[in-house]
Image (cartoon, rainbow, N blue to C red; front, top):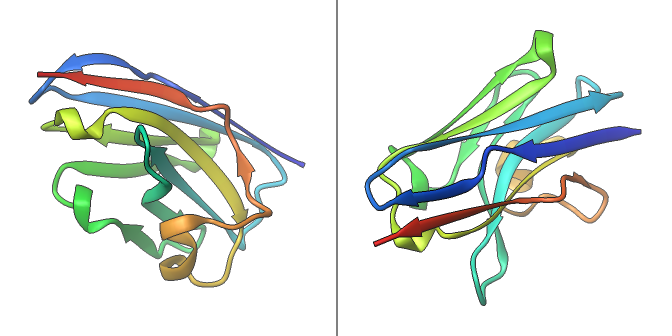
Amino acid sequence: QVQVAESGGGSVQAGGSLTLSCSLSGAVHMTYCTGWFRQRPGQEREGLAAIRFGGSTYTADSVKGRFTLSKDHSRGMMYLQMNRLEPEDTGTYYCAADRCTLIEKWGPSAGVSAYWGQGTQVTVAT
């Protein structure tokens, strides 16, 4: 069983920064992908950034250059550094983990078997 839990959301002015944290515990196997997703109001959930245990990564075009995923394997933590935030970044942010083979396929949408956190709200004001 894998447990994931996000923290660090909040409200910020446009142009500001936030760092989200995700705690990963349980049997996070070497074949797992872990990543960050968000759901904006009225939109489908979308993948933002993900990494496979071996190091291969995925980053959505919409956040390249602004959002950076990092992991601290020793602490079982994953982070999302978000810079130059825009009002369009407002939404609920989730971290997830699951077995995967290709990060390019898992990163955009994860899968039905993924383990999800409860989500953390990010609000970017104009």
